[in-house]
Image (cartoon, rainbow, N blue to C red; front, side):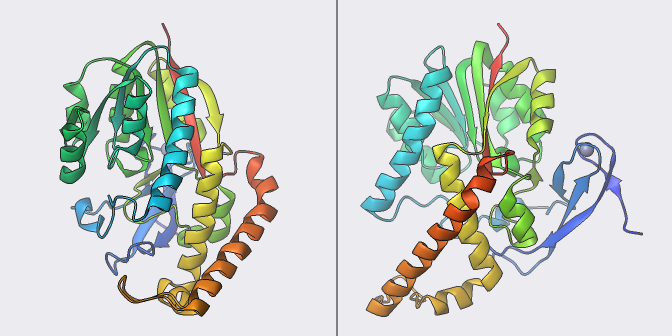
Length: 317
Ligand SMILES: [Zn+2]
C-alpha cells in the first residue's frame, strides 16, 4: 500500500500522485514526489526541499532577449491590463511577484498607482528606479502585513510557488478595499496538457511549483475570506498563449532537451551561429506545434481544460 500523508490544506489523506525531475531547468538530478488529496484535489510537493532558492537557476528573471520578444510580452501584459481595467473600481494596485515588472510599467502608464513585493534584487532595484515602490522580500506574508489597502491585488503565476499560500491569500484579501479585486493566474491541474504529459508537463515545473491549486479549492478559500468569484477562464487570449507554452515545453521535456536541441539543429551556446537548415527545422517545428494546438483547441476551450487559469475575485463591500 502506498503511504498516505495529510493534505497540507484540508488534512484529508493524500496519496503519492507522480514523481518528477526538474526537466525544465535541470537545476538538479533529484527526483521529487507530488501528492494528491482525495478530498480537495490539491496537488502538492512533499517533502519540501529545505532551500527552494537553489532551484531558481539560469535566466529566471531575464529581461526579454530581443525587441520581438519584448513586443510579444507587451501584448500579453496589455491583455492583463484590459482585465484589470474592466473590473477595477479604483487605481491603487499591488502586484506580488512582478519579476522585472512589465505589467506594472504598463499599468502606471494607464494611470494606476502601482506598488510591488518582489524577491529578485535586480528587479526590485529597477522598479524602484522607475518610481514604482517595490519591497524586496522572500517572505510575502510578512511583507504584505506592512502594506496598506488596494483596489487591485495581482498575483500572476505566483501562488504555485508559495509554501504559505493559504495565509498569503487570506492576507491579500484583508488588504483589499471594499469592492477591490484579487487576480490569480496559475497552472491549471485540470489541464488537458497535464493529463497527457503528466510528470513531463512543462507547467509542473518541479520543484519550483510546490502547489497545483484546483479552481474549486481557490473559490472555496476565497469565499471564506469574504471574496466572490466574478471571472473564471482558462481560454482568454493570455491563456491561449499558455496553452502554446505548455505544449511546447512538455513536448521538449518528453523528447529530452538535448535531443530536441540536436533534432532542431539548435546551437549549444548563444554565440554559436545558427545554420539555415536549423532555422528551417525550427520553423517546421513551430508550424507543426501550431497545427497540433489548433487541433487540440476545441477540447482545451471547454470544461476549463486550458493549461492556465485566470480567476478574479471581488471583496464584498
Ligand atoms: Zn485536501
